Image (cartoon, rainbow, N blue to C red; front, top):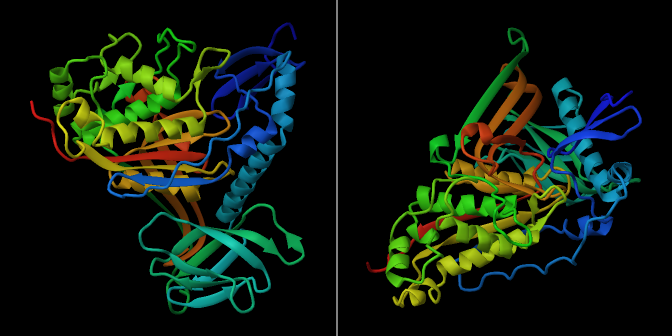
Length: 457
């Protein structure tokens, strides 16, 4: 075709490629995907759910690091594309995501497999089947239903809660004569008690959209992924920038001056002043003077073990980012570090907790997504990431939109959409943010801090 574009392809959310009619790459935009051996993805898909709290004496240890992995190398773009399409683990993830998308479509059409129960009513479903785990798709405090797996007759027992509505329920296990290797989705409909409405209640679509924010747009720190570190990988990387955003957010929005301190000075007086005052930058992009944040970038970059992709962008593994968050939190909340360093022995200056959730299988809403949504509802952001592309950002807005076809108070069809607005670390201004589907994220990092005391002047 003389170099004409025939097809536009997308590798996940982070890379677009323009191909000619022979499949040759003509142009691309974004981060060229790195394809790892299949076992590397499986090793890093081990579920992790770890909370570390400064007020607890015996916190759980971090899980062991997965074996080291190197990206596969390819002689040309065609080989990379073929590997992207045939890697077993990635195909399993994509297939699971497609199943969930199909389920949402069937829910909108009123054709999804449905389990019906009324408020306060207890019903046994799917007798004879065996299930080992379930996820009830809603982050609300008031549970829409109570669920008990197993019992006499097998299946599961559902008691309708006090909040009528339609919710996605996923069951993991096996069915008689039909072994299941992936969670099965059902639509759980909790209806009001009493007789279903008759006459005068024509079905109508009702849309409800609710927005929560961890601070306003103006209160979000605006940093970017500088590439002037002058190290073996000059790019800071999105993982360290996400952590820098979370640290600065905690200092500025939770009023914790001890969350950030000057790393560039040996002066006790200067460092004490830094711990006493909120001095993390609200804006730190490529052309800004290096300042005290540059030393944080260097430390976070090294702790995250950032490696550069072929296009120069920095990338980190989720385990390395989790270990770095643990290292930071230990320094910030340890009585034997900053207080001793500043000649002020005693209790630590700051305290709090952090959490890491990792589960790379398909829809991670039920693990990481709910945690981030609830953190934002409580007024705190959350770090989120895509496993396949090792891409990280800080989610600070959460929008939940419910589309319901209702006859009176009875829900006939439903669809729930959930989205995070994320601070990508690509510069300043709200236009630099992106919107991520909350069902797509593969893990999260949460940070919650408070100031215990201040050092003397």
